[in-house]
Length: 160
Image 1 (tube, rainbow, N blue to C red):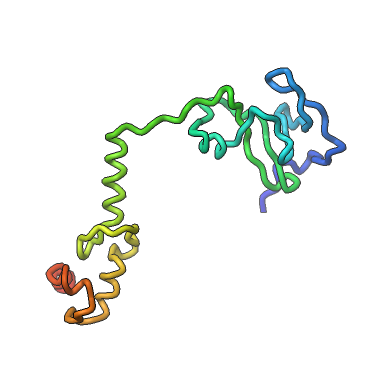
Image 2: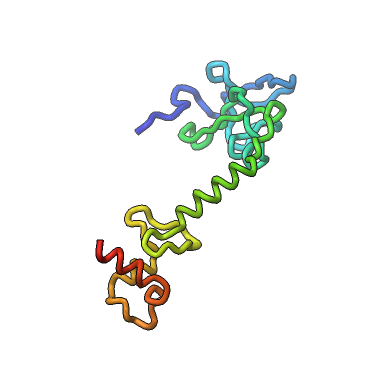
């Protein structure tokens, strides 16, 4: 089991101290090897985690983390980045979006019947749910949607 990040430092509120921030303000926290450390809900404004930056459509912009956010007595932690140094995330070009659409369409296409479904086909066998269900009978079931649209593809697959 991994040791907690802050195993040698005490995160008890009585051991906290005033830490000077980049903007000249002070916040209650700890110093851990020159990095400010804040408990959950103690972090000052102007700092955000990667997820919070992503929700704002921002990224760290190549800058190092400024501080550390710690909870569960040092068992869980996240880097904090300065909002004033964050940059907007890159926007995908139309060609990139088209390539992603094409890749997702390929993931949703059944290899057996060739239909594009509204879910991703399992890569273990490459068949849609209808083709998997269709493999259990002889292909003459009138209630089976596969018997109507892909008898030739199924016959080719069975012959191979």
